[in-house]
Image (tube, rainbow, N blue to C red; front, side, top):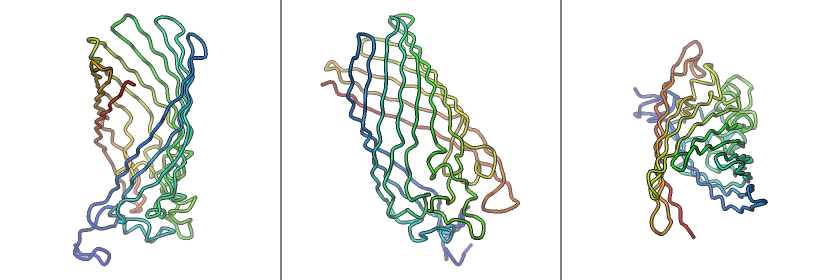
Length: 291
């Protein structure tokens, strides 16, 4: 169906044209300095150098609500840089038990020049997080690990502001400090259980499970924009590491998020209700060089 905004192009759920969505890629470089402060205790510090590459498309229908309507959608790829820091502690308290803790500050990102009308305050900071963990080694072939992690989603305005903030007359525009965002208004605690089996000196096999309550409820903030930001509760993972004769390692992992349906009232269509069921899988590949 033709619309005044889209002409002959089809409209979409967000009242824009053609397909709607966005792509966000993040690269974080974390060179690490570590000290062994005693025979069984070590600390480390990593400056975090981040780069984000972002593109949004099909959101033209919402652009009039933005502080910068021309910097909202369909502007191709844009790049932003940022910095933060991570500190950590590791201890072998028993031959069979190791403990650790880490803190990563918020990574403060530059504004996206071409999308500063989309994000609250114009940028997409990476939230701070902190964690504690324990690893048990019942014998030389197995490690069982438990981590508890807290992520401060609500402290990043581009994540924590409510979807509704800019949707009423006279409200602050999208792109301003108080403008609409994704409604992740709760900090999230994640619980992770992992198992490693050393099948041979070269091959390590891994499996894991993670649980974390969503950063929003089944309300207006949970449905309309969850099409763009899926946040499932349960996650399973499998992986392996292969060590070469030179000491280098190839790491491969696969994650599957158990589908979970979000239900709630629509922010875009008053009186309507919506449901969203994200399907999320992820593949990780890394390579470690021994110097």
